[in-house]
Image (cartoon, rainbow, N blue to C red; front, side, top):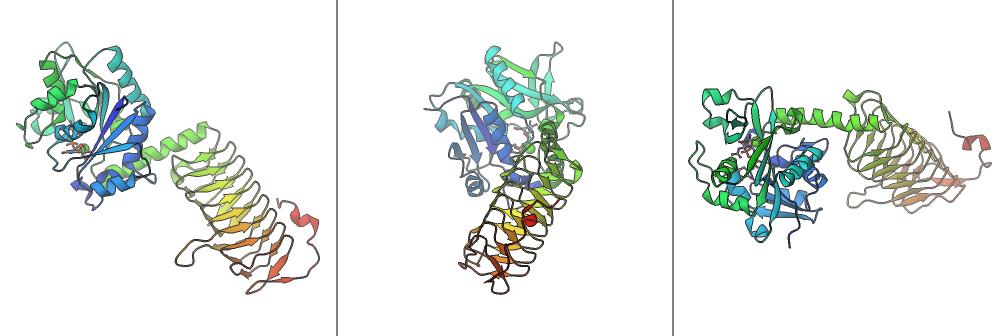
Length: 431
Ligand code: UD1
Ligand code: CA
């Protein structure tokens, strides 16, 4: 039983102009394949069932989305056009009656609110087809929206099939449709290939529905920014810049200081606490969580699976991956922490490194609360360094040679030495 609203995302095309072996919808924007943004947008708009139409690079696309078991895949064996692509979903949707949002997978900047608005209007206006359109300064590449003298929708004309006057129209089809099912199937059954590309055009469906006496509306509700289609690497770079500024704008609104938004790269999935300051040239990629009052950067790289408590300071050329750092941990210079669990108040010295990969597998490193990991030391995982312990500068703590709580180790390989308990001041946070 299919639950509505349904969303159909067209992603079977090659995208030749990308000049790539990779399926177009897998090219990344701010660290994530562009199709992910479209999936998020339709889900945000309330879609309960999502069907992605795959064809070129089908296996790549399926595996890139494999971690989301709620997505269904329809295969379009030959790319016979956007209308044909939608038909490939029919076996899933026999028996479903209700709205279907249909979008293309190569317009990643579309926002959930706009789509939600379209779904709501489709219902309230009781139309079989609602087109979201946009007026853009440069309509090149888009199908144009034709209206009659009273402003009512007439049809979509593909750019290739436009007369010179039609070509001048600036209201375009961004491929953001809501169709009522099963009504749409009647129109798709009538599609033909009588156009310059010899393809089944989804864009003919609204006009066909209208000819069958069904209600069709086109609403100019989308913004130029939302409908940027990715056909070339140039578009990809443009989309990256827009998405990056949207992400940073949201963080600024949430009370995070981003000193230089032009030179900071943050994945949209990052969660960052209030009063945290991100200095320039920092890259935050993947699922990263940062607490309040932290200082990040300049030149820090926080990767997927990084979780930082409050008041943490991560400085220049520090890379962190799949690691959790407690409150007030300091790693101010040149360090690498991978697969590490670092207790509150620990100090990670300049150029300290967790050697978390032995060439075959990753190992874990535990660093206890208040531990002092000296400059240039290497912790070979799996290993643990106890609470309040000290690892001397340049020491190599070899795997399984755990350092006990309060112990001091030095040298290569690291071995314990007896020295007076470190002065209390050393436990005080360096200002
Ligand atoms: C399409 C629209 C056009 C609109 C433009 C931008 C049609 C006929 N034209 O043109 O009006 O302005 O998008 O939104 O729909 N795809 C398939 N199977 C196919 C063909 C395409 O899955 O057989 C997918 C592609 O992967 C792509 C999307 O549909 O994600 C759009 O296809 P594309 O060839 O880029 O269409 P446009 O020429 O841009
Ligand atoms: Ca396109």
